[in-house]
Image (tube, rainbow, N blue to C red; front, side, top):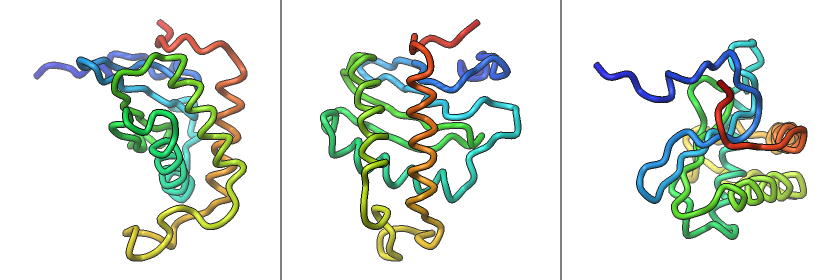
Length: 151
């Protein structure tokens, strides 16, 4: 069986940041890596779930609304995947940062926090989403983002 490309990245060398994971025609998959893999520093489920609700809602209502294909968590609990159609890397980075800032400024309930809207609505925390958004925003600002996995 053919090995998938994401398994060829040395996860022990990955730092928090934004990477181009793959390009399929006009769709780019971004690896929004929040935590350094294989260190035990994982995003807990409530934080993962809460950030997913907040980030997905804000980015799908932002400047790239027509280009967002998907946003969702990685099973390894170290980040998220963002699939975007026809957008350049710098625009995506700007919108990811803007989305994190919008989450930090959010007042009110977590989006989709009712039983009619979510299958696990009791497992949501705005404070957790804000803390993770702040942490990721700091990581993105800590170094120049090249969008390329380090070798």
